[in-house]
Amino acid sequence: MSLSLATALVLSVLVAQGVESKSGNHVAMMIQSHFLQHGVRLPTRAFREAVKNAAINVSHLSHRPSSLIILAMANEEALKRTVPIFLDSLRRVKVSGGTDAGKTFDGRLVLVAWSREALAMCRELQANYSHHCVRDAEHAAGKKSLGFHTDGFNALGFAKIKYILNGLSAGHDVMFLDADIIMMRDPLPYFYDHGGDMYVMMEKCLLFNETASIAAYEFVRHEKFTPPLNIGALFFKATAGVTRCVYNWIWDMYGQVAFRPQVWDQDIYGVLMPKCSYRFSIRLQILDPRLFQSACYPRCGCTYHDANVTAATLGKSVAGVPPVTGHLCDPGLWGSWLLRHFPCSGTTDQKAWHMRQFAKGLALGEPVHITKHWANEKKVGKEDKDGGGEVDEEFAGVSTAEGV
Ligand SMILES: *[C@@H]1O[C@H](CO)[C@@H](O)[C@H](O)[C@H]1NC(C)=O
Ligand SMILES: *[C@@H]1O[C@H](CO)[C@@H](O)[C@H](O)[C@H]1NC(C)=O
Ligand SMILES: *[C@@H]1O[C@H](CO)[C@@H](O)[C@H](O)[C@H]1NC(C)=O
Ligand SMILES: *[C@@H]1O[C@H](CO)[C@@H](O)[C@H](O)[C@H]1NC(C)=O
Image 1 (cartoon, rainbow, N blue to C red):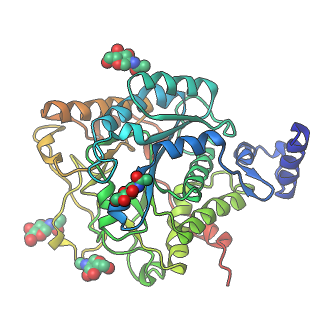
Image 2 (image 1 turned 30 degrees about the vertical axis):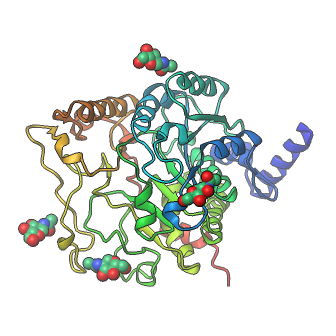
Image 3 (image 1 turned 180 degrees about the vertical axis):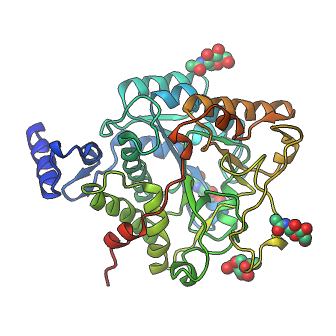
């Protein structure tokens, strides 16, 4: 296709959506490149190759021939600060079973970079780690850390869902990870042992039943409490229904962005995925917050007894693991954890500081400072609210495809 034809197509879509450049809706302009007139752009050859080379054989876990890919994305700022720590953690964890047993997780990761510079940085890191680097030139994004609800922040959700969709369409189960995560043990058996088709993190440490599907009738109808969700770590099984729901997720956002530039992937996931999953009898479950930890959880981490989770206590806040002294947390308690995500930890710089502290605690087994108090003392701005947004149900509900 000639450039002018491509431009004309993009413009016609924009005009069709009532988006004019002078309206100042930069997000709607930025994200057009992920779409063609007939839908979400197909994967590039480089993406398909990387995915093929990174895939893990998980047939032994899922009891059907299947493979899984791990996807993450990063800009220059993240590549400089958090990605090396993320990769270092992946390199220390090995696939625990099947024909790929013993391979380290860094080599199973497809890392998407957006700019030429970011791709170069991704490749430099290949001196020490065996991850796969792919450039997505379709995504226009800033180099700096993307504050909460800046244009760049809102635009990257579209890129993320495109990669998930293209991974699923190639037939692979997908684990998507934010680049501010430290992996501690192989999380794959969890996905296949707990009976879910999709998994998502909890935003807070609340008493909840990780074996219940939040796509069940009573949750979708608001008869039972659904916890706030966090999409820092996600799992999708490559089934027709799951793929359809992921397509709905991005298509719903695309429909909204013209008049609502702050449309947020995490909000729409929370509103739409349970409903869509219900229609297709897909099981959508939370990742046990005691194993998939988050820096948004109180004190030194989320813990509670199964016996405490009853119909009456569902959704109650948990106090968390107390520090040994001051803000120091004891790594002795982390033995069962699978990974830790670092939202609620300030700027990219501050996140990296927390991640390094955590990695140090893991390596040396000595108490370290990982609680979010440090970030509060430093007066972190809005970015600290990672995941703190309210779900705009009314808006999201209106455009949700409720076909027959
Ligand atoms: C994947 O693993 C299964 C055993 O779980 C094995 O039979 C199959 O050959 C493997 N597939 C590939 C492509 O290695
Ligand atoms: C690779 O690791 C070495 C040794 O730890 C370090 O000096 C070097 O800076 C690393 N290279 C990159 C690109 O991170
Ligand atoms: C948790 O969910 C499972 C599956 O839906 C159910 O069998 C079990 O009774 C639930 N437990 C509690 C305490 O609600
Ligand atoms: C959990 O139950 C135990 C008693 O079995 C109780 O002492 C404790 O306070 C409960 N914790 C929570 C968070 O409900």
